[in-house]
Image 1 (cartoon, rainbow over the protein chains, first blue to last red):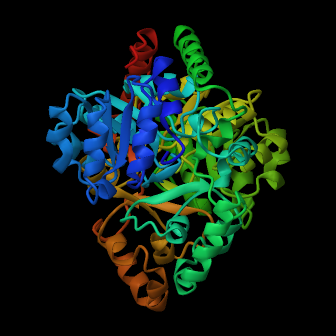
Image 2: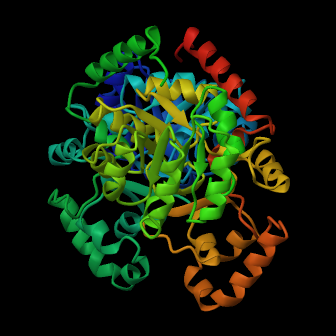
Length: 298
Length: 298
């Protein structure tokens, strides 16, 4: 949720009873500080891409200076940052994609583990949410585990709780909210797509010049650029300079046949672009109804 | 579950209150007829690989002659078989991997849709269970939807019910049962592996000479053969004849560093090799407990 989850969205989520996170992104200090200010001291947190943060650790200092409720680290070795985060009094949330990473996060002092399945939008790896969450709970029952990836409604929340999770983390659902900083044209596309119409690929990172380490790839809506290059990454690398210029132009022009709309498989569940507070109220209401009247079995 | 779900496993599952399916596999008529006999007329079904069945439709006649409770078709166009199955009085179950396929199965008269996520062992595609099941229910609320992929316990069943599914289909959990026809050495390996240790790949199908159409690939435990060839399929195709011989020898010798153990991510949840009836009893007990005492939220 880099650049799309800003202070307005994070504070709206926290004010409605969730924990809103600013998407710390790739290290744009001015953007981060402006969005933290925009959150008006709500009890929010900030999420960072760990391998990117390692290149600009000053970002973490800036985030911690605002006394956040939590810092979430994803995609990389969290160990070097654990002490600083915990000493600052923030909850130390680690998002993981494998059991190996979950065990590492536990050993490095994580307060909360987010088990993120491959259904998720944006960067992720290959394990599916339902088995990863269940197995993480099974192995780390002493820690709160939060389910992420493919969840966008109250039924998903209720399912996650049944797996033994303590909550859910949602990106795609909040992408399609009023407060999200994504362009309206991009939000509209999430409403039309089924969950079949996303793909996890390295193509967009190549085009954006983001040097992501294996095994992480980016899930986005399928579009003309993915149709052309996904599975043809070697050929793309041969004409990369030219293709990058075309990509930058498309992004600037909000041409989402070519620029990426970064959402996950849960895009197939989106029907509207409400306020974040309305999302949370609807999810809680639906989850409570499901849990109060468990359905019958086949 | 071709060749590992035979009549003994299918009847044990049905006798314990489930619906046991014989894995109809690739068209070995003698094997299929022997296993149907071995099921002793329990209320079972048979599952077929649709694109393979199309080459040997006599298999379906043999299965229907035994008056099965259900026929399940997976991986291919179900339309040519729908009338024959329904006219024989069997439930027509269609396993799908995308929303597009789910809509097609609905239009072709499926009585039950199995929405199978990529976590599943054996063949499958790319969507994750939690989002595929939720979206299938959302779009086909008038049909019973069964969740498959990554589910191996009562918490998984309870989660599936919360998503709106009417039940679950489990392969990997029943692979590690007494009645399963897989070798004991293979079953043992499922107990040691975490769910991280599986991979979906075309390598084993190339080595077995199984000509699977896109987008289906086979999820198995990672082993030396996958380490060597996954991602190097072009090089494998250059030495395929030799490598096939080596693979066949490994399979005959039950050398599972080289031959495939065909299970899914739920392998990380397996701790024992019980009777199938014990599996079902434990799952029902755990699911009922979860549903009766919904957990608190974070």
